[in-house]
Image 1: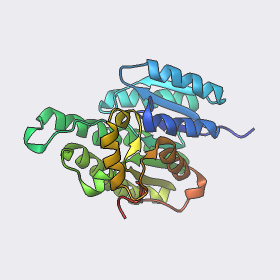
Image 2 (image 1 turned 90 degrees about the vertical axis):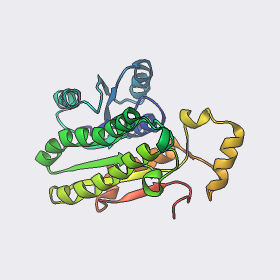
Image 3 (image 1 turned 45 degrees about the horizontal axis):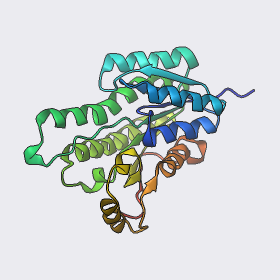
Length: 246
C-alpha cells in the first residue's frame, strides 16, 4: 500500500485555507493545520477530514512566533515522519489609509503574513531537502501585484511573499523543491459575505468575468501546484482573479 502524502496548511480553520485543506484530504493526503485561539472551527474541520478518510493533526501555533512554529513542525514530523507539501495560507488584514494606520497594525500584518511565511518555510525546508523533494505554495494576493488604497500593510506583505517565493525557488530548485505563489482576487468567503449587495455589485463590475471567485477555485490551483502534474513549474505567481490583472 502506497504511503499517504502529508500536507501542512497554515491558517486552515476557515475560508480559502479550509478549502485547500479539504481538497488535499479528498485526494488522500494526511493534513496538518494550526490554529491560534478558536479551536471550534478546526474541531469541526477535523470531523470533515475523517469523513473523507484523511487523518488530521491540529496544533495550536502562532506562525509569527518561531518557537511555536518549531513545535508545530516538530509535531508533524513526529506523527507523519515527513512533509510533502507546504501551503503558507495564514494571513490577516488591518485595513486603513496610510495617514491613519497605526504602527502596530502595520507590524502585525507583516508579522503574520510575511514573517510567518518565512518562519514556517524555513522550518519545513530541511525535511524536504533531506528527501530531495517538496512543494511550497504561498498565498499572495492581486493587491501584492497592483497595490490597493487602504491596504499598504497587506499589499506590502503580499508583495513580499512574491519576492520571497521567487528567491527560494532559485535556492531550492537543485534539490527538486518547487516554490510557487498564487494571487487570488476577490473571493467569496466569510470576509466578503458581510459586504452589502451594492458593494458586491460594484466589485463584480471591476472583474472581467463579472463575479467573485470561490475558495474551491483557489484550492484547485493550489492542489495542482502541490501535485506531480506541476513538476516543471517553480518561481511563478499565478493570478486567480477572473481577469482583473492581465
